[in-house]
Image 1 (cartoon, helix red, strand yellow):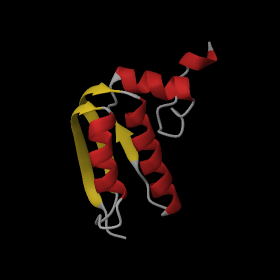
Image 2: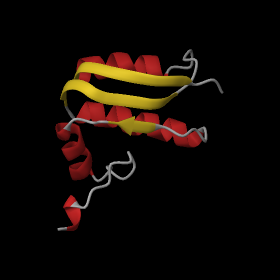
Image 3: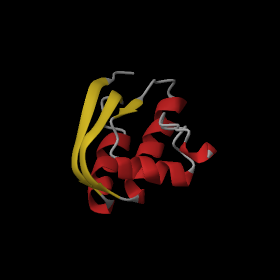
Image 4: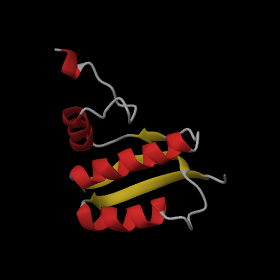
Length: 98
């Protein structure tokens, strides 16, 4: 499988944008999954952003592809922690051990 080196997501990552990204990243015409998805430029997010990342991670796992999500905004990390998927995305924290 071919892979993109990395992908920078920018701006809002809410339901409308996630639909577009989902089609592009999960579609069969895609040339491959990125190795790294950079999230530092995401300005707004909701649970649909989290669903997109989980779907990408699932696809990568099924294809034995190593995928990392770097520099997520705090709001996205919080959603992942509350949803119990922070470990799946590589963002495990000790916050929920308290």
